[in-house]
Each structure stands twice: as C-alpha cells, then as structure tokens.
Image (cartoon, rainbow, N blue to C red; front, side, top):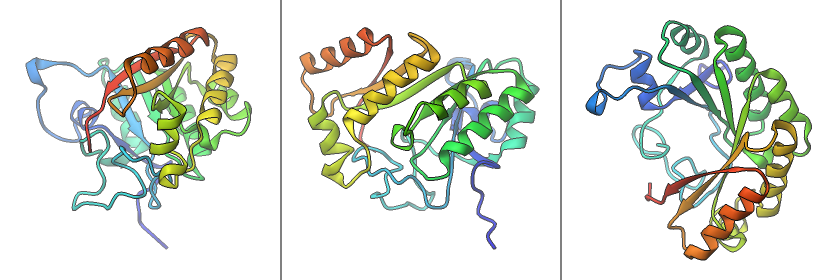
Length: 232
C-alpha cells in the first residue's frame, strides 16, 4: 500500500503553469501571460532514460527537492484539480502532455489526453517517448483521444551524438533509427507539419550537421523546435 502520487491521477506541472493555475503565488516578468499548459507524467520509478544532459535521467542523483527538469521544479498535483482550474480560465489555449520513459506511460498518456479533451475541449499536444512505441496503433489512439499535434525530442543532431548521449554510450534505451522511424509514423497519422522534433544546439555537433538535421525534418514534413544546451 502506498500514497505515492503517481500518474495518471497525479501529474506534474511546470512552475509557470502552477503559478497560472493558482497552485502557487508569484508573478511573471513584465506581466507575461502563459497560454500553454505543460504537464509531465510522474512515477515513483522515474524515467528509465539515462540521457546524459537531462535532469530526469535515471543516472542522476535526486536532490533535496527531487529531480528538476529544464532547471525548474515541477510540482505534482491531482489531475482532476488541474482540469477544473483549467476550465476556469480563458488564458490557457493548449495543453502539452509529456511522457517519460516508463512502462505505464503510454496508456496513461492516452488516458490524460482523453480526460483533458472531454472535460476542457482545449487543444492538446503530446511529447512522446518513441522507445515505448512499437507500431502505429498508440499514435492513432492519441489522435483519437483528442491530440492534434505530436512532438519528439530527438535532441542530438547526429546518430553518433545520439548514441553517445542517449543510447548505448550511457546505457540508455533510446535508438536513433527507431526515433526517426516513429517520426515518420507520426506524420502518417497526424499529417504533415503536425509533428515536431526538438533539437539541442551545443551537444558537440557542427553547424552543418545541425542544418542537415533541420533539412531531414523539413523533407519529412516535420517542424523543428530549437533549444540551446544548458547543463542541468
């Protein structure tokens, strides 16, 4: 018997989302307004990925406030409460639900997408862990549940860097070819330019290699979301 607050009944929110929904008190720089709600699935076992640069990596020791993700805390709240508070504001227009690499994350993601769509009608994106995807069926289920866009964090611009930082080089489960295969599967389900990839500049790639990754995505009908590397 455990009272650990796990998904799908509990999810983490970004700090900005926590402030916007009134879970915490605080203000935004220059009165900025958050219009996109970011949620992260949460499990006692954490993420099974061992990505060298990620704050959620299974290889990273937990600090006094737990593990951070993109350098901020992600407080955990009941899914029902997040949904109810989202319904009471016209500020939020889209929800992005992020998976972690965990055996239960696939079905739980579909559940959270469906609950949010049925209760709020908001636009929904999903940031998936391709290592949990074996065929096209779960992608179709996400779309059927209410997601209209899908994201995949490839992060490293070359297969060598990907393997070194996310795959066998760190004892992780992720594989370059599989990630790109899932990208193409996603395009076939959601349509061209309704799938996006994340790439991080500064992991050791050359400018040419990064531009070539952009072009690969563009040719596949995929948007590119670009981030700069900042160590956790």
